Every structure is written in structure tokens, then in C-alpha cells.
Length: 307
Image (cartoon, rainbow, N blue to C red; front, side, top):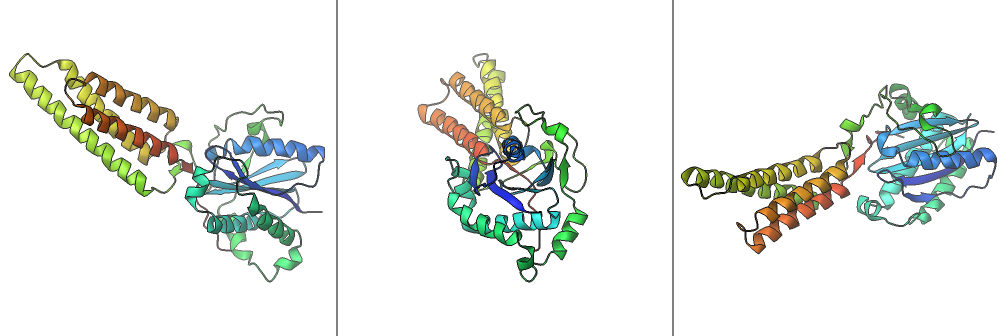
């Protein structure tokens, strides 16, 4: 019998479960699949936006969009077109019900558990395909899957269900190709744009003061050359923060904290040349930009379904 067994909604950046259906079956195969669910949840940001994992007599299918992934467990003979149509319905309803800010700021697991009601109703419909014949059009989804087939995750890349897993360092093939160096970030917010502008402003101020320090050094021997280095290092740190805010890169959050540390060190060294308000402004802007970098995480390519 081909059926959908369970489904869940997971945040991509950290694998936090936002909502899930209640599983009724307690077989050993289901227990193993739950472990695969957790292992996949921790690696969603490294995977394409549409994938399949074949785990014995079960399939785990998922799609990712706008920083949220929609995952489902079904029997191995459940049609892919119905599986991804089911996930697409979950995605549309979740996006309509909860905005991006709510999902980004959620801190408790299953904080949107009330969405389980919609998951259960939709699962019941898709487990009775006769009821779907007049409600959805699968031709567009069939064409979408044919033109851009889901990436099939090899079991060897995931590792056994006992928690020993390898990194997803494969070179993805097909239309769903997404490399970690070219992942898209979530849409920029107003606070992110303000942070970008303030970081550019701090970089420009450091650059201007650096050139003035060079002029003072050329005119007299009283200027410390280390001040010039500190100003230009501050400029480079501010510009690199702008880069991290706009583009995805590996170890992005770690780099942002290290860059903020460099900004703090430069301003500590320039203590004699700046008053307290200037130091406070530069350090506060650096901290604000670091926070915005942390909040703006990677997302998978948003699927363009027409179902």
C-alpha cells in the first residue's frame, strides 16, 4: 500500500523542527527513518531545494524555500508527483500562515504545532488519491519533475542511521544543482539594508582618517605609522562585513565574529585619536552588522511550482 506516513516542517539554517504530524506506526523501519530525518535536518543548507532519500522500503522527500524545509516520509512506491505536490501544498499554506520573521526568530521546537492540523488533513487527502482527481492538476508538477528532477541522495553520503554521517561534499548534478559557494541568501530586510549602509559609512570614515594620517606622517615625524595600519584594517573589516552581509560563504558566521573582533581591536588602538562617542559608534555599528549577518542565512532555490 502506497501512503504518506508523516511530514514535518524544519528551519533550514539550524534544523529546528517547527511543526510535525503525529506518527502512528512504530516499526523498526520507521524508527530508522526518524534518525535519517534528524541527520538530513542538520544538512539542509548544504542540499538542493528538492531531494529524495531512499531508505529501504521508505522514501524521504523534501523541498526547501525561504529558509524553511518541508519533509515527508512515504512508502517506496508512493508516486513522486503526488509526494512533491503534497509538499508544495504544505509550503504554500505555511508561507501564507506564518511570515519569514516568525520562522527566523522561533526558538522553541514545534512552536507552530497547530500547523499539524493542516498537515493531517492534507495527508488524508493525498492518501486517498481518488479525492484528488478534481482538486489538483498534476500535469504541471509532472513536467516540473521531468525538467528538473529531484536530487537523489545516495545512502552512502548519509551514513548509517546510528548517527555516523559523512559531509555532503558531493558535486550535485542536474537542474537542482546548488553549491555551497553559490547559495542564495534570504531576502534582505530593512534592518539589513541599514546595516549595509552604516558599515559602508564606517569604512569610508576609516579610509578618510587613514589618508589624513598618511599626510600627517609625510609632513612630520610625529604621526605613528601603526595608526595608519589600524585605520586601513578598520576599512577592510567594514567592507568585508558588507561582503558577508550580501554573499554566502563557508563559515560565514565565524568570519563575521572574527571581523567584528578586528573592528574592536582597531578602535581600541585608535583610542587616543577618537572620542568615546566615535568609538561607541564604530563598535555599535560593527555589532549591529554582525547580528544582521547572523540573521540573514542561506536558503535553497525557491521552487517554481504551478499546481
